[in-house]
Image 1 (cartoon, rainbow, N blue to C red):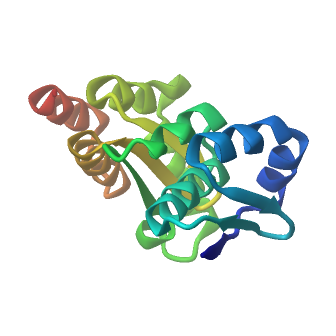
Image 2: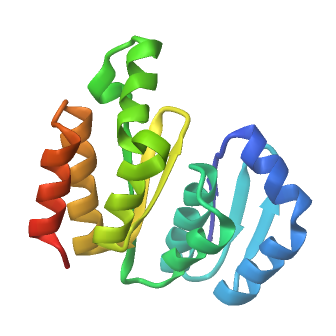
Length: 164
């Protein structure tokens, strides 16, 4: 069985430079991976293909290769939030919203990660989360609160009450 996944060109270049990552992924998952314009994944097990696609997609969305590998564990999930859903078509508004999620000197992003144990990557037009189900759910809610205009202090109180 074979499937494909596309990732941004600049992320693909990083993958191509680090062939040992692909070898490691192939060994961990027991599959064949090829890098062309897109990433092709071949395996007898369709569930393995889905897991590998999630790992590659997470890397493409800005996570480190190590963080993306956690998706091989079936307890971990990848959630992708499209910032355009909150900003309309305005590029300036999108930048503002991403900046709200990052916070001053990265404080908001770090707080969400600390309180939920989830990992967050902000890349392009998306904000992505990797974590266990409850971690992702709470992180997503906190991020969406910021994107909808909630005060940072309100979001921090929400995180304190939701602490896992």
